[in-house]
Length: 122
Image 1 (spheres, rainbow, N blue to C red):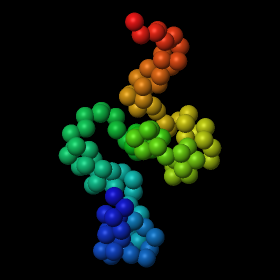
Image 2 (image 1 turned 135 degrees about the vertical axis):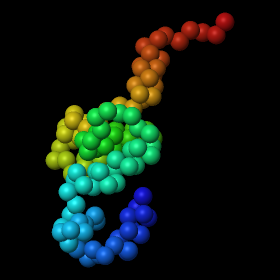
Image 3 (image 1 turned 30 degrees about the vertical axis):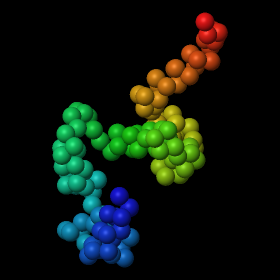
């Protein structure tokens, strides 16, 4: 992903403006979020065959935070908080992060192991 963004940065006619996706109509100004969504995000969602009816920027942010904090990525809370530009860990955990379904199952199994007495082998 980072490599693709660096490549785009080198070829964009808007280099040096501090805008990653600039409007062709309003030179140098960023694209409106809705325009960016319709041109780039929606086609990617369609290609991925995602059928979630209400998918928006907030959903993508929640997915990002949840995956970053999951054991799959293992980023620290502080790192995710800063990446998402949140002022507090409570915002990151309380509003954005959700547990990944496998995490719920694994956590429940570990708790059950702690609470279940071990039986000697017969």
